[in-house]
Image 1 (cartoon, rainbow, N blue to C red):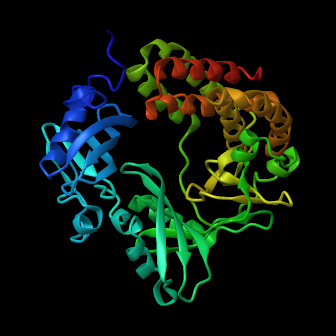
Image 2 (image 1 turned 90 degrees about the horizontal axis):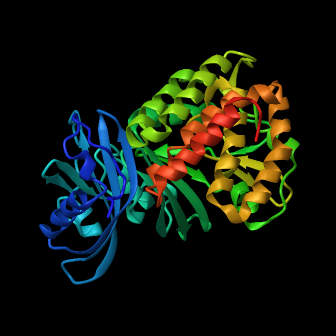
Length: 417
């Protein structure tokens, strides 16, 4: 029986190749058992890999605690070429979440239990309703319930809070925890970003947690997948350039982004590396042609970042990547994401591809580009999306990655889809 593909052997990262298999699961089990837990199942669900620098896997673990109660835990194990300082675990973490000493070493691996994170010092408080209640200050509510939505170890975590009682009417808030550098940039954006065209999910920062009220409406992704009424292409294309900010941030060079993705694909899926390199070559040639100038852009614009209200007015969320860049890259990213979603959800593929066919010309026109010149940028966006099946350890992810690289190659020619 062939072993499941995973993180490859990396001489700079001892034990990396075992993280998605039995060695990683044993390390997580040993960590918990030494703290009085009994593991019944451990499944890898997310992988992060930077060749020569870092290999990390997040696990979904079913276990019984010291009191015999069943719990589902989020656990992480990693190896790094350079060890860095760990954020300290607050004293109250064991009492509230049931795991004493939430970080430790098991063989070559650093292992930790969510909501501890070595880099995100604000994460434990963000995951605790009582701590969030205290962060809300003088207008503290009677209670705050917490739902963890997304967690990317060492990078970010997103929460939904239901706030009830006290001096506040019942409401929903969203919270995001980021690395310090990203947090500083997000603070600047939340102070400076503005728009006359769309509602923005801006709020306040408290104790390292970014808090923003929920915007009205449903995500455009939900409407596309569930068959709801859709906003016009012109309205969605109007999101390009809808933001204004005086802030500045460096933008990676498109060719550098493409070649960085190629270097990862060479390691995890070498059979797709040739096509990936051809995409990077076309990005390198095409990125300069038809350049549209620098504007304030969203930086990660796609269908799940857009909220559609009943009157088809729009809102934008996840603003921590806002900064100077090309409108064409926001347009290309949006278009490529619709194709990637169609590949991931075949039942909605016809609707997604049809909507993209209407939206793509409007996006290109708004970005000031001929549609054909959008191709190399779409190729870059799809190339970056190609590693998504690996990141979530999708079944048969090498084949899914290869299909996305093939699509990126077709898009990069400018011939469309």
